[in-house]
Amino acid sequence: MRRFAILPAAFSIAAALSGCDGGGGGVPTNGRLIDQVHPSQNYAQATEVQGLLAPANTLASGVIEAPEVSDYPQAIVDRLLASWTGSRPDARIWLTPDTAFTSDVSVGGAIFLNTGLIRYFHDAPEIQKEDALAFVLAHELSHILLGHTAAQRENKALKNGVFSAMKWGSMVGRFSAGSGATDAVSKAILSSMGAKAFLDTALFPSWSRGQEEEADALAVDLMARTGYSVSAATDVMDVLISSEDQDIARLAQAEAQKETSFTADSFTFRAKAGDEIDRAIVDALRAAAQQHPHARERRLALAAYLRQAYPVRAHVTLTRKPLQEWVKSAPVTNLLKGVDLLGEAASLIGQSQWGQARQVLAHVRQPAAGSAYYALMTYQVAMQTGQSASAQRLLATAAQRDDVTFPIAVAWGTALSAAGKTGEAEAYMEKEQKAMSNTGFLPYRIKNARQAKDGISSLKLSVICEGLGDDNLARQCSAMEKN
Image (cartoon, rainbow, N blue to C red; front, top):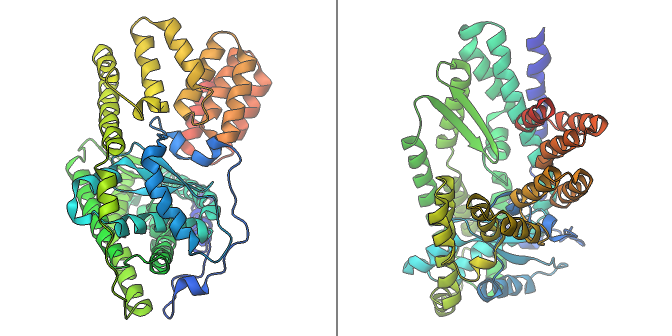
């Protein structure tokens, strides 16, 4: 009976997923998307910086505020928006110290530009043209204009359900027919989600494939209206395909024999050695990911759209000089050097090489030295090298930053609780949880409630945590409740 009680949950989730593409009616097969989309009259904007920067502030790396670097891409965004006939959102550029050739946009409407993408433009002369960067920015801007950000929270909640259903399904197989059920159970779970629905919505981070293809189409429309060459979009796609191929190769090479795993967003599904049911699920997910290379499908869809929407293209001179001057400028090179040092320091901290990390951090200059990431690491190093008073001052200051990250906020809440200031700790963490929309604070709030011997609050927070449907979070909350 337990088997039939649990598996239908995956079916109901799949039904929801199949209808959750988030805004827009798809890429048109006749005409241009920009002429057929209905502009929003109002764009939801985060009221606090913490909300605007989510999910970048979930990571220790956070963002780096450097107007001397971001002003140039911001001017491109403003130029693209000027061609939009509807109301215009306040789409602002934020820099993130991430090595990937990607960008993203938050639910609150912030556009995150990775330093890895900037570095690629810096190092690759063949793509050093403003038109290519304009496509990257127009793509993220299009997610906002098409209303995709409004659907992102719902997609994220559905992904939680999908992964919970998968884990429950593997447990059902384990408790029912044993290893003989491996193939049947894994296939049932995967087919119940529906291959296309799962791949579109749950496999790839942040956006469904349909949303990505819509954003690509509107991006080239915005470029055409603004006077950029739409052909530059395919150059960016080629880089994405190459980057994706390298990621797949690295993943295959790094595959551990003792444990295999599949990761999407913040979820990791692991199969230990000898766990044939979970291994079958991971293998199926890996195969699906490799059979459906996302960037390649986007490239094909974009090529089809360009053929039908822009069969005849006016000659447009590619704009190279402004971008070349920008990527070689002192502010950009200083940023890239600083991010390299932050990465080196983070690696040393991960190895508990505190003295060496302190030496590396001493060489970090602005704008990287003004980041929350730098503040967090200087605090950690000070704590581990006998400078506790200095560390607490650094942490107290970092905790009040507008761009405070989740690790800093947790460290400050934990420090307040350890000092017996449990009421202050709860008020701070509750405020930051709401501002960041980050339920990851719940285990630490439970720990704080137990520190305060407040059983009622601890129980209340535990019930909320269990009801969210996130297995990993529920385990953390349970561990805090028991300890």
